[in-house]
Image (cartoon, rainbow, N blue to C red; front, side):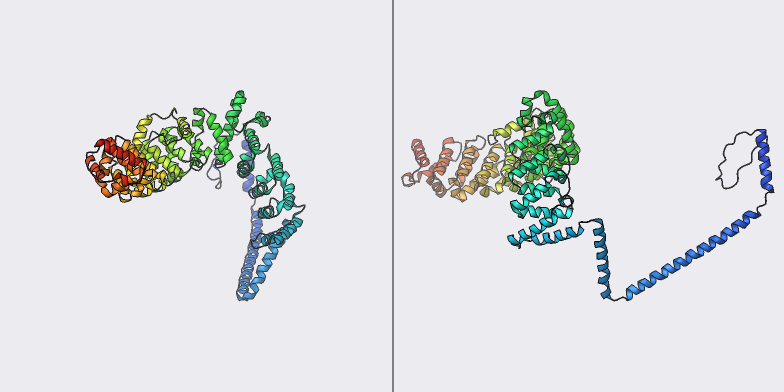
Length: 609
């Protein structure tokens, strides 16, 4: 059997596999080949020539059309260039008319909306009288009556509603509130209409607000997870809700079973778990889902959201909190530490986060250390860092360096002084017992390996020199304020570096201006330094050496100054004590003003004799 021939050109060189042919197949194929050879191609060539003529004709026509089109364009351009400028505004007016016609066809209320906005533009101005504005509001009411449902979602009319609620008074406000009350849930989800709901809450009566609450009740859980509606829920919870309403709002997040008994519960989860301990697993599961949703959508900036997350982290296990900490939550922590709930969430993330988590959290605070230290809630986060972070080198580099570069600013804030006090004397007498108890909650966390004493010492060794240097240059200004003056005492007694420069500045300040010694701040500071075994000898010798007879006389004239001189003599630590006694012997105590300090100092000197 002969092999089949290769295919013709145009098959892209691909040979299709062919099945073996039988006798009948081969004979039929041969017959077909013969018929192809014998067929005359005259008819085909005639058809192709006719087609080619038709195609050429069509091309010619298309080319002529293109030329005509180009010629028409050039002529119109020439006409436009030659036209006068006075004809241009007519063209613009035509465009405006077309636009207006198109909008009226698309929206039946277009003409009405234009009138509403024109009246609103007049009514919202500050120089409009109250009576005139009320007239405008009445006009707006007539235009809007019966069309609220279509107008309330228009982004450009949201401010019209807000203006009416702000200036309309009880009569006109009730018209808007009664119409929109059934639609409050849907309005809260709108990007612009949510501001209408906020205005309704702000300018409504107590009964109207309760009615709005009843409309929203049962939808708070859904609305809190909505990016736009959460602001309405937070505003209601934070600014307008009563204690009972807050409880109802929060218990909605604990699950359907407990929501039925919401009137018997509390907004604090600890109280709820005391009443229903068997429900803990289901409540924690619900809160975990909600917490993950809040973090994923970046809604942690709202107070109600922070409250719910805090309830979860306060009662979750250390492992659950560890699993909760993710990059998205870490990024958001620095923005929530200024609130009471947010700072406590950040503290628990530090306590139950791994070394890697803590490192990432600390990095987010770069550039925000001074603001955090000065905040009434944020400073607790820094104290928690000092308590639990083992990587003190990272703390020095990112937190302490920025803090100590701005000591002048930090010292002026009450909470900033607490941060500096914590570095000098962690959990000392100055620290409130409630703060100490709060910080003790993180002492036994499973991720801190270094002992607290070692950690505190490393931070103190780094901070001491910078603090002493800054305080030495600002002694006089710090003495004038009782709060900042007490920091001087803590620095002298607790600093791990040489405190001689600060002692010298203290002596110089009081020697230059004797009135300082009469103040309470200097009295407490000098008393603490003279009672401290570490500094009493050096400080006494510095004082005796610097004080001349005139300054000693000024000190003894006031009660607190006399007591300071008496303490120097009582301790008997100074090597140059005799020179002080010699200066005092020249004074006539009977001629000095009466005071307890003067009498005690006189009695002490008479016993020495």
